[in-house]
Length: 303
Image: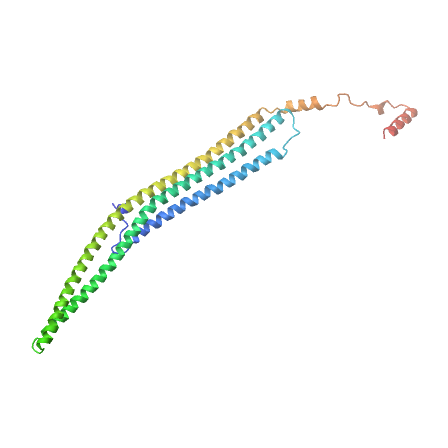
């Protein structure tokens, strides 16, 4: 079974390559960006909730809604407007809660950023050290190879001119050979010293790379867990808002259940009635032209 540990999956055979480290850093940066996007989402959702809450408050406080109703229907409408006001207030509270959650996400991001910075600075220095020492080692190797070549050429010159060169010329050749041997030996020591130093830096880098991988894996697990929990909390907050709103709406429904059509009709009749006696059928009582004239005169007066 393949391991999913960071420390076992982000290497590269090329000595100077940092592709594994860079892959982890890129992933961590993307994770941080995702948290920032959710943080911005919460802030924008808070703006929406705040606007909606304020709009509800303005609606129920400024817009008339059945203001001339009487008795039980009037009481139901009063409860309705009060509960809509309460719903608006609850959305304002939700907006504040969402801003608080966004602030917590920001604090979490910044905390991880600070923690990561220490590791990143250390690893960047290790990479620079490794690159610089590698270059020094390659330069030392090049110098060593050149000095060895110079020594070989000096030896060949001595052998070629062993029988034809004058004693003075041979002396010069031997001096040159001795000098080239000393230079080759010195360059060999320098090259070996750089190799040993490079190996030490490689071991230190490898050790720090393992530690960095372990730290980054722990941090990424924490980030995913925090992000998941933050999203879970957000869903609970939205669900709770629905519950709160429904409880307020239930108060309205309870008052509508006790709303009595008969009582409201009776209330209206009791407070607004104008009388129980209708006008008589006076046309049926008219029996003479004189009466007709009297009625006509009364109609003229009324008009």
